[in-house]
Length: 446
Figure 1 (tube, rainbow, N blue to C red):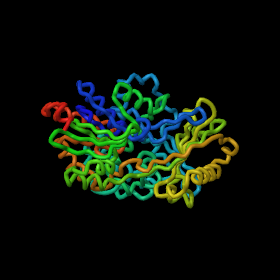
Figure 2 (cartoon, rainbow, N blue to C red):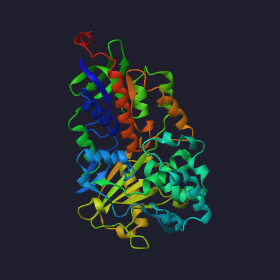
Figure 3 (cartoon, rainbow, N blue to C red):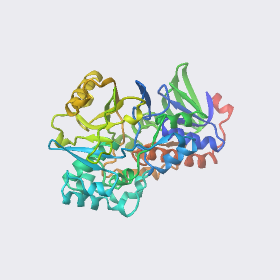
Figure 4 (spheres, rainbow, N blue to C red):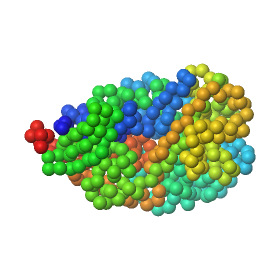
């Protein structure tokens, strides 16, 4: 049995951030990751020379924690800001309408919505207009956790404006998430997206490099004992066991519930009720750039097909990513929420998306040179109405015991939330370590 100060389970942003904070304070954390490489949902793959984000998430200058981390890791010089920003083409009744989601002027001139629709959006998002939402912690706007986003604004505003953003960021429709998240939308899109030349995985690589990260290790159980926290696992070399002074479960909520059967009953109940959206997508590599422009000649970041205007189409969002390709073009097509894409095989999904893409953009015919199908069964936690109240109660209990939790489901459904949860879990663990004796050799021998 190996003795450690802290065992961190999960090598995503939350887990690696927590381990980084602990190591900076002189402790010896070990990070256990079941996958072959660290990163969690943040993955980068090269498709015919182009960088493809397999899970990732949107990061803008408004995500101050992530931007600070990029600077601290020495990656600021690799940051780029796509010119397309959040310019979008939204399809309604067979007609494309252009909108710049990043500014008030774009909203006011959005022809897919009436004046009444625009006013309902402005009213619903007033908290963001009057004061910035904290993108790393939804509890700062907990007073809005009464109704869903779709109930606060008009149906058309929810479908053709807010739904575009909730689908992009969280893979859900507006009626599925709490009004608490509505102020997050304008706060996120008023700044340009930030990307890294090496992909989001560059952050993961830099975080993991100085840490003891062991991949291909599947944890089976976490247990608090008299001697410390015991962590049982299985790796390529067989059965493993760790005895630590504390542990941090930086996994999705369902995995945390399974690994920690001795968790307090309220904690287990909360973890078991967290719901996740899913993402089914295909990246298409093209022989030439394919990103279109809007009516003013500005490049588009995406084209969206909201549910009422989609008919029998499965595509929900088309993202134009030519700037990520050294030559030619790159397009990412993502299924609309609840489209049934999960029922198709990878090959069938690729064929279906390619056929729909060519129907919508015939000029792509003969240009597609490669494709990659991606799936995220647990994409983003769904912060439905009432979630914030349950989360508030859970977070009030995290300062007790030797096992802690980290993950975006505890703060906000984005990388900023995962980062914040990792730093907070590390801070709580540091306070515990100051009162817990070091694990001795004798304890490990028992």
